[in-house]
Image (cartoon, rainbow, N blue to C red; front, side, top):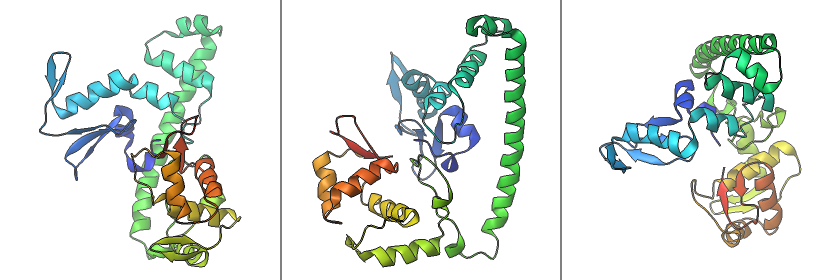
Length: 253
């Protein structure tokens, strides 16, 4: 799942980002990497890293728009009807053609197009204001311990449970874990904030972009807490990990 906080609006629209520390381009949808300086062959032609990642987003994912609209991101609060309209707008259909396709009036389609445009303007303004405000936050007298911890990308619903500061995190960790290295959970709290902090810490024991069998997941979790089945279930339920339908493969979200 894409974390909008880790990339710009332009990168989201392109479907890839450039990582200076790796000197490579990376697909936002599958994390495929394209190191600069390498040449990538495809269908008898050769592409630079930037050209290759652009082609990859289009051929492997159907383009950035298709992938964004099909994502299950909690930040994309569009109905199926709205997604269909946006796809048709992107394909260049006229209001009359869309109206005929969706059994709507042309006036309704025009109104929807207007609403999208106005919401986009509002989003641009909010983004600019927040970027300026967040710069002030980083330079304010607030200590690091007062800052909120980031919400993990797989969170299925964001509410006050995620209003957790660094100081609260440290306090919770010290109260529920008997050891942080190696990680040993003393008690699994039923309180929501504590549960999220516990699961976040446990999820750190798994490597990103790595597949695990259920046996491997159990082996890691059983070293941390006796009731590893409950921990495994909550890691899935709270969006820290994902798995295939048959449970044969697990990975961090």
